[in-house]
Every structure is written in structure tokens, then in C-alpha cells.
Image 1 (cartoon, rainbow, N blue to C red):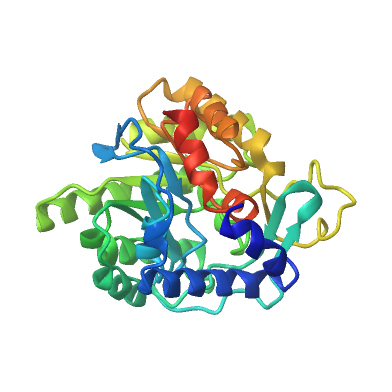
Image 2: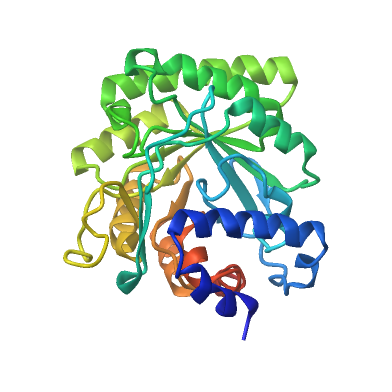
Length: 338
């Protein structure tokens, strides 16, 4: 029996966000005491080269679990091939009112409406600088809730500028359902303008720092086929380095009538698996290998990860699966993917 199987029933008896905070702080403490070094790490898996980066294995931590980058070293001890922190905004913001995180245990799902609660990009950068982690680190950037969409570009430029020298890659998050009107930035004209400016800034920063830091676009699972084709075309036109599919869904397919299913927010976990996989399959057809895909959404087993890769993903990320299955999930996925 692993330690998490003992701790999990206790955590699931308390408020979900409190349990999240306790777990994060507990991981930091355990790592500081050297306790995580005793965990059984995944065997060395076949490395993947994606976005010009060498990933030691294909299993990553999705953004959202460690918004401020306080537990980077602790998560590294769990055996991830890469870690993504954030979403972080230019200015600190509290996010939406509590409660804002809910478990749907019967379906192994989670609903959240955090709203990019974070301590701001400057705080995150300081945490990254104090970390000893030397592996692949993604930093996920977003806009502040009170920044209107017509000014969103400046927030993303600020985020990119401040994290560029500290990230292995940068993720541009325009797909959270919990920031009002954010998903409108996925519409063709708005997205094309945003990507054009961000690519120009990426080129400027590459010259300034003497290194190229790739950036990925994170998209929603609730896009209609026409939108998905438009986005795929724009990813190719603007030479975006990768796409992360997908964020949480507003759909409640598979959880209707279950406790907490009617809570507002984005749904993740097992109920998202099929929807996310369908998006990956469609993207894979339209991108035809020109832009790599990072698959995330409903991965709770090695078989789920294999399905994502078979559908066209080069890498995978987990979040809700880690909540329900614990750190052993990383080893299981790594073993399944080889």
C-alpha cells in the first residue's frame, strides 16, 4: 500500500481547496525534510524531443496544481519528465470567491472556478529562481480578470517578457472558462492578431537573451469543428511551437445528476477524457505533424495516456488524475508509454 492511499481518504473528507493547499504545502515540507527522495521513481523512459527540447519522459504536470511555483522541487521528486506551473498573471489577484473547487467522486471528476488566483508573475519568477530544479519547466501565462480583451495582448506580452529567461517553454492560456470572455480570444481574428504579436515578441526576446524559448497555445475542449480547423490553420501559419489540448470543459456530459455536477466552472478528470481525445485526434489530422500536441484531460491510467499518444499527442500532462490516483500514476504512465 502506498502512502497516498492512506492519506487520500483523510484529504477527501475536507474541503477540496483546503485539501489542495495542505497537499501542496505537505509536499514542500516533505521535500525539505528529504522524505520524497525515498519515493520509487519511474524507470528511465524513452526520451522525447518536442519543441526542440529533450524531455526525459513524456509525462508532465499540468498547469493549475502549482500556480505560484512553490513546489517545483517537490514535484520533480515524483518523476515527472516536465513540470508546468501557473497560470500566472501580471498582477496578483485573488480569483473567484470560495468555495471554488469541487470533487465529483463518483465520476472521478473535479470542477473548479478558481479564476487565475495567483500571487503575480514577479512572485512566481522569484520562486523559480530559488528552485534547484534543472529539468524542463513550462510557465503558463494568462491575463488579469479586470483587463479587457482589447488590452489582453499587453498582459500576455508582460507575462512572456518576465518569464522568458526562466522558462524552458511558455504556455499562453486563452481557454480557461473561469475568466470572463477569455475564450473569445480563441476566435479567428483575435487569435491571429494575438499570435502574430507574441511570435514577434518571442523573436525579439530570443535575440535579447541569446536563446529561443518555445511557446505553446492551450485551447478549450468545447470548440466546434470549424473553430478547431481555424485554430489549426493559425497554429501553422504563425509557426506556433506546440498546442496543449485541452483545458477544462463547460460540458457536464457523464456527470449529470451527480453531487457537485451543477457547480459553475470547468470540469476535468475522467469525464473529460473522451472530449479531450477527440480534440487531439482532430488536431492531429489538420496539423499533419507540423505542430506537436501535448495531450491533457482525463488521464487516470497508463492506458489513458497511451490513448492520447495514439490519437496524436507527443507528450501528456496530468492534474486531476494525480488527485485521484496519487504519485504512482506517474510511474504507471511512464511504464505504459515506455
